[in-house]
Image 1 (cartoon, rainbow, N blue to C red):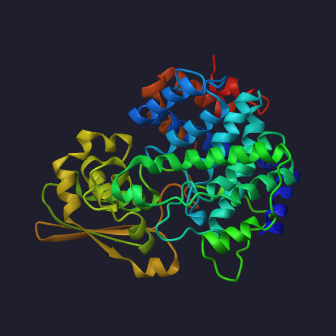
Image 2 (cartoon, rainbow, N blue to C red; image 1 turned 60 degrees about the vertical axis):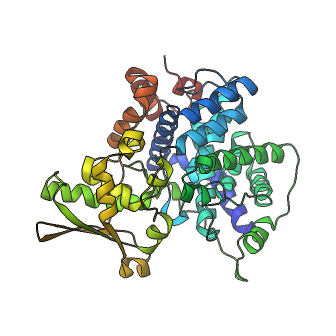
Image 3 (tube, helix red, strand yellow; image 1 turned 120 degrees about the vertical axis):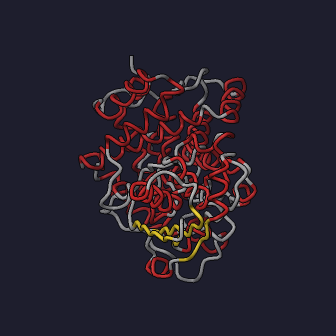
Length: 439
């Protein structure tokens, strides 16, 4: 794996990924979407309280949108990652079974703001971290009982950090290998119990990557076989070492952005619900039975029933389906106290049966079929792909609208519109500080 990583990093430095117009546009959309999720997270009491404590304990020069007091690079990295994941609405990469951008973006942005770097420099660091993290997620599949956030994503954060700090391909590799020696064993347990400790995992992973980048640029070295040892010892991998997707393929172009505030697996049932509402109306009170047939991984990861807290609901196929059937929407408002107590949502969630779609499971494909009975009549709808899947991009207009929806309540409509325009249209040479704080 060491040689695969070295080849990948040299390719990323020798071939400017932003020279491909589609890749540059995708990186800008990734930045805009994740930033919107972060800003929305500032509206949550725990996130706001963390920001206040960082401002008191670790003040610095970085001013993030939605933050009332400036903080340090380390604090900004933690806050960006933690806030962005709070509503479970940020990006992902299907082949990685996780979110490489969630970890790579925070240090790339924080370092760029602190060091006065340009939008282009920040985007190159982001893409470097995304390409490394995406491949690591694909190769280093987590064990049962673990949660993906806070694990391999820190490897991508390390590559993004080292590049933003001015390191070369070798320095980036050293930073990645330094993280491989100490990747956290992050548990799924908080999700199952409805505890928000899980929302700190990306912040931990992103700051670990930042620290590894600083170390690598300072002369700290690391064993070249660290990735292999992590695979064998921490993940209990077999004798055959995984290989990384080779250079020449930009995983950034494969990544998805989410239309809904929920785990990606929940989206397929939610889209079935929207389709059913279009065909059969919005009144759910006559529904007598609900069955969702979906691939096995979705049930294993998002099988939480009768959720009592927001994070349990974000990881609940049945809640996401019921909420979308009732409200026709699955946004951040889904997880307010009043929304969680909606009696019709609770009734439909309890009615819903989950079944495994063996064909989708065996083919490692995603999709879902919804069957509803009411008045003695049975109706069915199916989806085999959703916005963000290959061939169905969550495009610029959709990302603009989502950013305004998520960010405007916190920073105001006019500022949200201004940030949108500068991220999408400003030249690469524009200082990132001007992009995120337009006049």
